[in-house]
Image 1 (cartoon, rainbow, N blue to C red):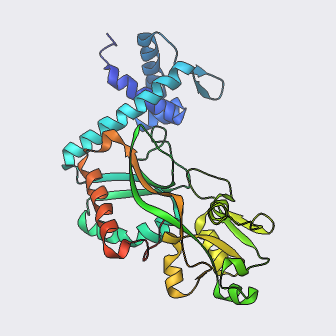
Image 2 (cartoon, one colour):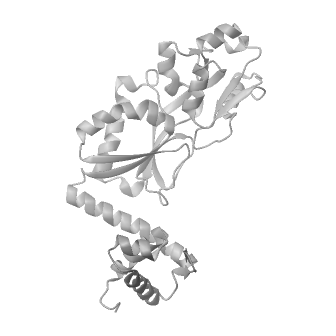
Image 3 (cartoon, one colour):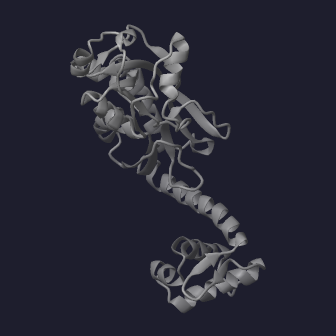
Length: 311
C-alpha cells in the first residue's frame, strides 16, 4: 500500500514536479509543503522500483525512466482532463488549442472567428502560430492547419485548399522594369518565402515555376528571402522585387490592384492547407464544432481560391 495515498495522486505529484523541475514550485501548486512533496516522490519511486529524478545541488534532472513516464503520463492526464471537461460541459465549453500557419491565421482565419464566437460562445480558443508542424504529443495543440504536402499516417489529415503559384509584383515595380510578363524581365530582385511544413529551402517555389515552364530565371542571383510569408507579401508591395505568389494568399491584393500578376496562368504548387489532428479527437463535440465551422467557411462562395487569402 502507498500509505493510503492513491497511485494517481502520486503520479500527479510527479507530473507537476517534472513540469516545474522543482519540488518547491510543485508543492506550491498542489498546496503542500516541500517536505510533503519530496515524500510523495520518494513513495512513488519506491513503489515503481526506479528513480525518477537525479537530485543535484541546485536543480532536478529527470532520469531516462522519468522522461519516459512523464511523456506517457502527460498525455494520459490531458486526456482525462479533456474527458472530464467534455462531460461536465456537454463538450460545448472549454478550450481548443489550435496550431496554425502565420499568414493563414492573419489573412483567412482571423476575419472568420467572430462568426465562430457567435455560434459557440462557450468555447475558448488558444491560437499558436508556427510555419512548421507542432508536435501534438509534446505541445498543447488539439488541431492544426498547415501549408505543405507531407502525409501523417498516425494523424487525421484533411485537405482544405490546394495552392497555386503565380509571379507578382507591385504596379510601380512593373512600370519601373517595363514588364507585363515574366519573360520581359531581364534583371530584377526575386522574393522568396520558405514558410511551409515541407521545405525550408528558400528557392523551392521559384524552382517549381521554372521547371514547369522549362525556363531558366536567375532567381538565386539577386534575392530577398523570408521565412514568414506575410513579410514576403509586404516586400512585394513595397516594390522590392517579384514574389512567387501563393494565389490563395495574394488574391485580394490582385483584386485591389496593390499587386499585379506577371503571368496569365497559375500552376499547381503541389502543396496545400491541411487540417491535422490526432485521430482520437475526432469524436469530441467541441472539435466537431470547430471542424464543421471550417468546412462551412470553405464551402461558402467567398472562400474560393479566387476571392480569399490564406496560410
